[in-house]
Image (cartoon, rainbow over all chains, first blue to last red; front, side, top):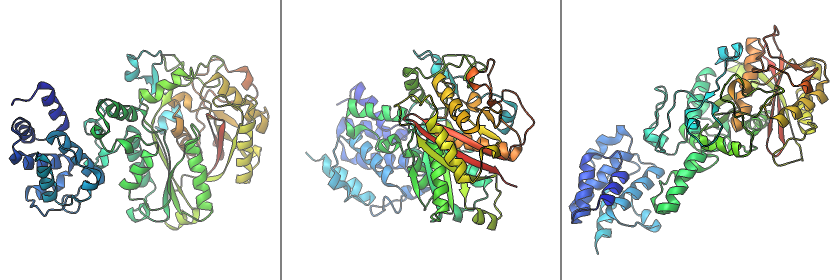
Length: 117
Length: 398
C-alpha cells in the first residue's frame, strides 16, 4: 500500500542526511513491511550517526560487531539511532530492552522481532 | 580585537535576527563568522578553524561552540601541552545562561509530538550547564568542573572562586569560561523588562555614563581565561599576561532586579577585593566598570565608586560594554580579559558614546577619550540581577 504524503515527509525528516538508498528502503518497508529492508535501514541510520573515519568498519561489519567498541558510537549517538529506528520501523523499544543491545546483530534481530504481530 | 579596544571601535550593529522581530530592539553585539539557521547543529555554518566531530556537534549549543573556539585559542596562547590540559589538577569554571533557543525548540517537539520524538541530546543542550558538560568531554578535563549561576556576575564569580581553589592548593590551573548564545531568545526577554536600548545607531547605544543612556545592548560569544598558580606557571616558563591579586563579593539585599541606588553592595565588594589584594584605593589606576548603560545601574555603580575612592578624578573608569554590548554571564570573564589587556598593553580603554556625561559622575575619572596612562593595577566590577556584586583585582606582570 502506498504511503501518505505526510508519512513520506516524516520518514524524510527522521532520515535527514541518510543516503538515498536508506530512504528508499524506508519507503519500501513502510509500503510492504518487508523484513528484508530492516538491515539496510539500520545500516543507513548507523552510518549517519557514526564518525566518518569509522565508516569502513560498518561496511565490513558482521553480526558480532560491537556498537560502542567497534563502531565508536557513544551513549547519545545510540539513543539517536534507537529513536530514528523506532520512527522509521514503527516500533517501540523499552528502556529495559535497550540494555540488551550490544552488537549490530542484537540491534537488527531485536528490530526484526518487534515487527512480528 | 585588541586594536578595536584600543581605538574604541564598536562591535555593536543592527542584528539581522532582530530586524524583522516585533520588538523594537534592533542592536546587538553580533557574533561574526557563525550562522545558526535551523536547530540542527549539522546544518550550522562555522568558521573553518572549528572542526568538530559528529559526536561533538550532537549536544552543542551556539554558546558551547563559541567556547570551543575560545578554549582552543586559550590553550595555544597559554602554551599548555595536552597532558596539562587533561590533568587532575587542571579544572574548569563555567558560566552561561544556556540556550533558550534550543530549549524552546526541544520542548516544542516534546509537547507537539511526544517525548519519544525529541532528539535525545536535547536534554544536554537545554541544561544551563551544557557548556561545562561539553567542554569536559571535548577537552578530556580531569580536575574540578562546575558551572556558576549568578546572572550577570556569573563568570566573575567563576574567576574569583578559581582564585580561591588555586590559593587553597586544590588546583594548579583552572579554565574560566564565559559564553552566551546572543540568540534573539536570549535577547528579547530583556526587552520585556524594558532594560534594552531601542536605538538603531551603534554610536548612540549603549552609552554608559551618558546622561541620556537608555538601556543596554546584548552580546554573546565566549571568553576563556587560563588561571594558573604562579610558581607552576614560572616553572614551565608560561607566558604570563597579568596577575589576579584578589577579589571580593557582596550582595545588595535589596531587590530582585533593581540595584541598590546607594551602591553599598558593590562598594563592599570593591573594599573586600582591595583588602584581599593587600592594596589601598590610591593604588588603583583603572576600573573596568560593570556599567551596562541602564539609568539605574550606572548611577548605583557611580555611587559605589564614589564611596570607595571619593570624587578625586582617580582611578580612571570606563565601560567597555559601550563597545561590545553586555555579555550577561559572559561579561565578567570578557571584561577581566579587557582589564588584563589594558595592563599588559599599557592603555586605558575609553568609555565610548558619551556626549553628555551624567552629572552624577562628576568628579569621577570616567574617560571618554584616550589618555596617556599605563595602568599597573586594575579592578573589574560585575553586578547581576538579585544584587550580586563581584570585584576582581589585577596587577600588571613585571
